[in-house]
Length: 314
Image 1 (cartoon, rainbow, N blue to C red):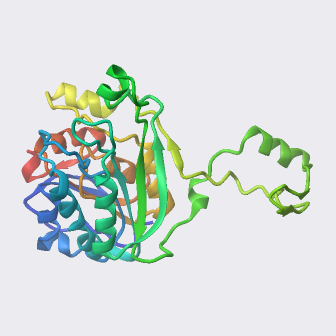
Image 2 (cartoon, rainbow, N blue to C red; image 1 turned 60 degrees about the vertical axis):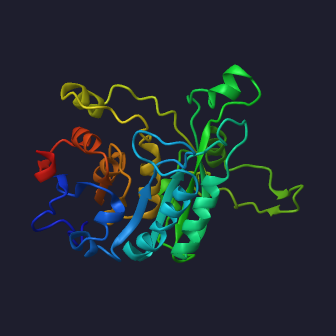
Image 3 (tube, helix red, strand yellow; image 1 turned 90 degrees about the horizontal axis):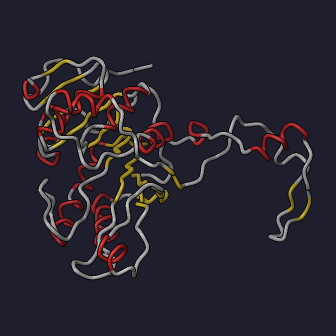
């Protein structure tokens, strides 16, 4: 149930399209979030979920910052995100790995950037998550495929931060199916109670409550190999470039369900092809997505069944 509608009235000039629950803007988020049309949302965002440009040590076509400049650039978002979040809101952010240029050594730039953002935004670190991609290609290729001195880099981290140590969160919204052994235990209601090697004493009824599912771990496994999607077909039909680093839907789905309720507002300031907005819409959350590359915002239209094209999307 939506208690407040955030996207009513005349849309700002930077709007590309909107749906019944959200709006996508084109431009640099640090600029758009400092303008009056968006500033009225300060204190109302329940979740900032995003994957910013990776902290690479070399320049990419899409205009990422490099090295120390990247750390300063990302850290400046700390106070800005803090202003937009509600008192019980959360920031969940994927941080990609980086390597020292020309060397088989990992860079600490991602961690340094995270800590700088945390400090500048006065956030608490609630929990660390890992996205494991079993289908990820071997990388970095020079050290893995050519010289064979490293194993492939197959996961990235997602960091959950908040202004309070007790933000809105409920793991009952992200329960997973019980294992076969747990289903059997609930059916037979028999297991080996008593003291464990850890010296924990397990009582007779400790594990016999059916809560509808198991509490998930902080490792999310998603292969990200979907190829036959409405988004890809839309881009192909309209001659638009497909975003090269799309996140799997499992990531925003988990955090949106875990950290928000229907009607809450979700913000993705580095939206790419707008997987976050699509999942937020499917889950009944309102959303605001911002992306700097115009082509990606036009392609994102294909993620939604019904949209209203606005000034920058015509």
